[in-house]
Length: 412
Image (cartoon, rainbow, N blue to C red; front, side, top):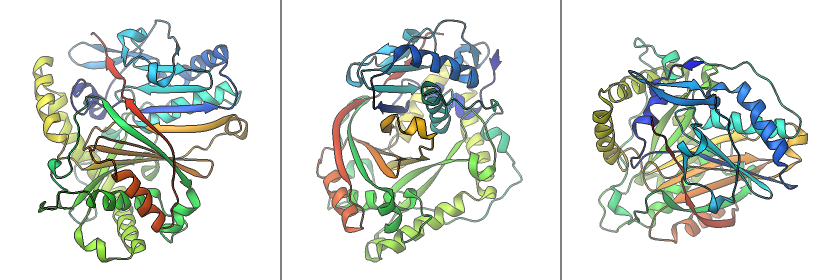
């Protein structure tokens, strides 16, 4: 079977091997040792229900996905010893799944799907593993193209000013390596900090991260604004399902005047900006603009010229798109038998834009953050924890590690 790719599927292919290549990472820690035979069958069942993950990449006048007839394999390796390249090494599959005694880790090329799609596949594997698989009809319509409407003008939104220059906070160039800090706090405290029972961590944590970064800027910097790229999944607001990439982003900038405001008010401002961004009219407008912006790059022929242009564009976008990224995937909402078999759940993403990526997920009422950053000043995260504590959110640092992203390396 052959599957067409949309612009947000083609974009990760274009920026492969550049400064902004991004391949997300999920990890589940089980309460009992991994049963490899059960895990293999769970992956096999999930591939039938998520056909894009059962594909390899092909090229003939353009990139597309095609069902991979080869056998997939599972890799016995702890996170720190896992392979750092998949594709050629995984029989053409655009993902790798590793297991250790108690852990199962999954990472994939964004060309298949975004974080929500990867989360759907990985949690499907877990559900089948524990005998609670949920069969759903594959939704194979393209993502942003399905929302495209040039006539939509959207609801006016306040233009956000640019964030600080890259050299304002010194950072280390480490390839695809980064320091990863894992923090946990009660979800109830996160919501209480915003004084809204239905508030989202996306309206609470980005301003706190911005405040921590501002404490460590070069005192001579003229621009101390901090821009955050908040990832928005279009599926929920648009009542639309697809396995293809279907995300946009909203840049929100923390500016000087927020320092004199009560934190709950700052959080309300962030929430208002996000609420406006997820209105259907604005999602359609943003989806249309994103398609129009990316299509010229992913349509360039021949391929070598596209790669040259993508490398140049990536160099510019790395530090101009935003100062940090915030991604919240929501709640790990799985059947009780599955949740009872899990001890931990992690989601992380390398620093594709800026030098910090905050990936958040709600696991059993606990907000788990995986913060990847490459700042030379190692007091930023402790200061973030202190600022959160002052706002009523008591984060516990449970781990700190060096994380290296695994990348797609496929010869086609």
